Amino acid sequence: MSPKHVRVLVIVLAALALAATVIWWLTRPKPVAVVVQTVATGLVQDTVANTRAGTVKACRRAGLSPTIGGQIVRLPVREGDAVKAGQILMEFWNTDRRARLALARNEFAAAQARANQACVLADVARRNAQRLRTMKKKGLASDEAIDQADGEAKAKAAACRAAQAQAEVARSRIHVAEAALDQTRLKAPFDGIVAEINGEIGEFVTPSPVGVATPPAIDLIDRQCLYISAPIDEVDAPKIRAGMPARLSLDAYPGRIFAGHVRRVAPYVLEVARQARTVDVEAEFDHPEDSRGMLPGYSADIEVIVAEKPGVLRVPTEAILEGDKVLIFHGDGEALEARRIETGLSNWEWTEVIRGLREGETVVVSVDRKGVEPGVPAVRESVEP
Image 1 (cartoon, rainbow, N blue to C red):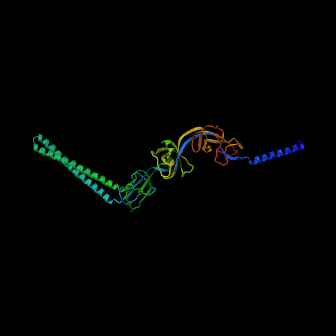
Image 2 (image 1 turned 30 degrees about the horizontal axis):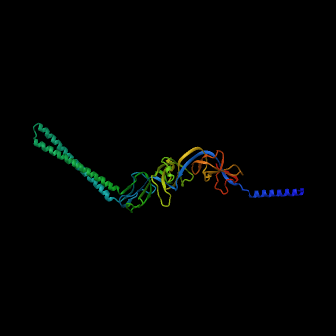
Image 3 (image 1 turned 90 degrees about the horizontal axis):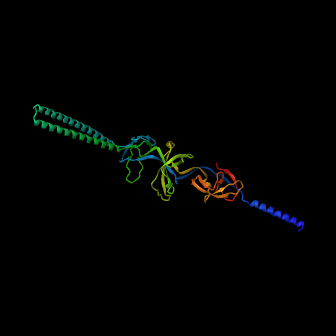
C-alpha cells in the first residue's frame, strides 16, 4: 500500500471515530437529578393509623329529655353556660304538683301532731297503771282497777304506735309528691357545659317515643375530659392493646402532635355498607391540659405505636422499591445501583434495615421521578436531613 493510500485510510478511520464519538455523545443517557439521603441509625417505630377521620368526644355527654310532657315555664340557663351537678336546667308547668306537695307536708304535720297527742295519752296511762300497782302494795287498790289500768295503758301505747305509723305514711306521701314535682324539672347530672337547648318558654315538650330518636331537650357536655375515637382497619386492630402509646393530631391544630395512649379497643367490628370493616379505637391525652379549648366534634387522627427500636440502621420508607430494593447513589455522574435489602420494623416514615446496607452509604429518595432507574447516571440534587 502506498503512502498516499495509508494517509487516506488514517483520515477515514479518524473521521469514523469522530463520528462515533459524536453519535455516542448525542445519544448517551443524560444524568437524572435525584434526592438522596445518607444511611444512618435512629429510631424506627411500627405504627397503625386510622382509616377514616376520627372525632374528639367528651367522656361524659348527656342528651337530657323529660320523662313526662309539659309546657316550659322556666329556662334558667342558656347555651354555653357552665352548670353544676343538680342545677335546674329546664322547668315545666307544675302548679298542681307543688300544691300536692304542700298538701302532703300539711298532712304530715297534722299526722305528727296526732301521733304526739296519742303518745302523751299513752304515757299518762302507763304512769297511772304504775301508781295503782304501788297503791295495791299498801292495800289501797283492787286487782280489778289494776287490770283495767294496765289494759288502758296497753291500748293507749298501741294507739301511739299506730299514730306514729300514720305519720310515717304521711312523710312517704311527701317523698312521692317531691318525686312527682322533680319529674317537671330537668337537672344537670354532672358539672358541664350546656351545648344545646331545644325549646323555648311557653312551648310544649314531650318525651321521646320508645324506639324513635328525637333531639334532646338539653344537650350537656363535660369538657373537662376529652378523648378521640377513630376507626382502625380490622387487619390492623389485633395489634392494638389498651395502654399503647399514641400520637394524636387534629385538623384544628395543624402541625401539632399530642402525646396520648390507647384507652379502649372496641370488642366488635363495625360493618358499614360500601366501607371497609373497622374497629373503633379510643385514645386519651397523656396531659389533659393539652385538650383545653378543644371542642367535641373536632376531626382527629390516632397513630398507635405498636413497637419501636431505637438506634437501628434505617432508610426512608419512600426510598424502598418493590421487592425490598433500594437505589444506591455512588456519586455525581455514576450509574445508580439496585440492591436488595432485608427490612424489619417499618412505618410511613422510616424502615429498619437488617442487612444489605452499611451506615454512610447513600440511597435515592426520589425513586418515583421519571427516568430514575438502575444503571442510569445520576447527579445529586439535594440531601435529605
